[in-house]
Length: 246
Image 1 (cartoon, rainbow, N blue to C red):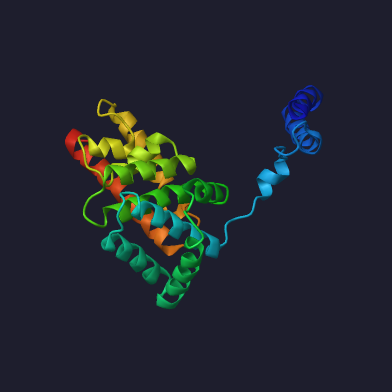
Image 2 (cartoon, rainbow, N blue to C red):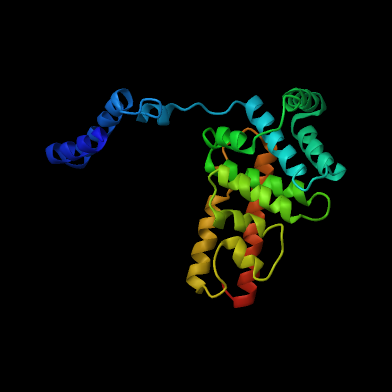
């Protein structure tokens, strides 16, 4: 590909900076003259992809809520109330009702595609926001008192579409579905991990899930980040007590 040839030539001419410039220029040429123009993408497209608007984010979030609520084949009133309460507390009653009206119009047009919705969000939201989306969806599934296997599988499918790896999904799942070694699962380490490995995992998790890293105007997603951050802290404190760590 031209971009790689440009990088090699640039490296020999001007070192690392030349390689970067060569790759950049080659990418532009690839975008215009690539053999498969329908799939060609320049680096300009990658850097200028638009952020999701608040209205689009709200409707797509509501679409994911609907998918999870229907995952076990029945619509639970407690799960519906959980979603409605979230939108009302976040946006106010009037705006929440307007969002639901818009969603109902879209919903009448047919079955909602989880893959389409997630692809849209994955291209326009930060990774930290997508993690909080999964956390929120698990909250919906738990609203009726239990999380079914079909709901877990559906959220796992959504995680894949959102480009969230399985270990991250398992970490979030452990916050809602309790099992042996739960605190270790939340921190994404084995129980056999050394003290140093546990501390490192905690620092990485705390940094990743810190509310300040969730760059979104959606207040409920921010609240979800705070809750998740607290659970990471609680998991580490549990392990600290078990091991006598300082």
